[in-house]
Image (tube, rainbow, N blue to C red):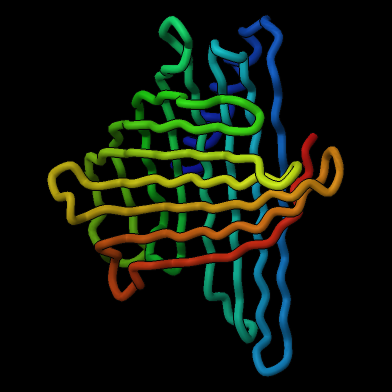
Length: 244
């Protein structure tokens, strides 16, 4: 088993053991999404995106979250995108009103056409909930992390200490539809001109109690990409999400 597989296995085992140790009543949020686009004619292209989200929450006590995404695209039978990422996160609330929380997170990702074999990013930090209701959720986070990147070519590995800031907004619009905005900013501590930004905007429209239609706009920006990789990578994904 390679290093990535061992890391993901460790994260999954940690969450399973921690879940068994907790006896209080919890709220589960489990979702799986699948999106596929296909076009033919002058250009034969296809896109496949699948994701998994599992959240175990003891309200105002602690929560654990597992996430995974896989994205693949081809044009004229030639692959032009291959990405995947996964993360495990544990957070616990504190303070009189339990709006503050401390979190620990391990993230790993791969992007073939950005020359990234794998990138590991363990981090820890603080967050604060400004609003936490069914109709409006708003929070911000600040963290420190250590980013280790291995490249697919002969480029030397990168090891950087990074600052991580995050803003999250979820707002109910119309009747049951929701608009979600999640933005991460990753500047390198000793060189703030070297940074990454990940932005994800999602419109969720429920079809039934368990099924919803999602339209996602994802933008990844790297100020200093490896090789001749473009700085900006934009994806628009339509998918069906099933809650269980």
